[in-house]
Amino acid sequence: MEPRSITAVQSRLLSLLDEVLGHDGYGSIRVDVRLLKKGQKEVIVDCGKQYRYVVDFVPSAAASPPSPSAVVAR
Figure (cartoon, rainbow, N blue to C red):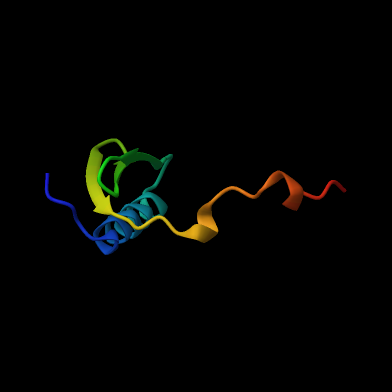
C-alpha cells in the first residue's frame, strides 16, 4: 500500500463525523494508530466500515518522553 498524506485521513475523519452527527440514531468512530517501520504510521478508522491508511511521519524531538528530572510532583 502506498503511503498517503495526512490530509486524506483528516478528510475521511471529517466526512465520517458529519455522517455520524447527521444520522438519526447512535454512531461511533474509532481511530487506531500503530507505528510501522521506515518512518510510517498505520491509521485505521473504524465507523462500521474500516478505512486503512499508511502515512509518512517524521518523529520530532518534542514528542520524546520527558526525562525523570523534568517531572514535577504536585
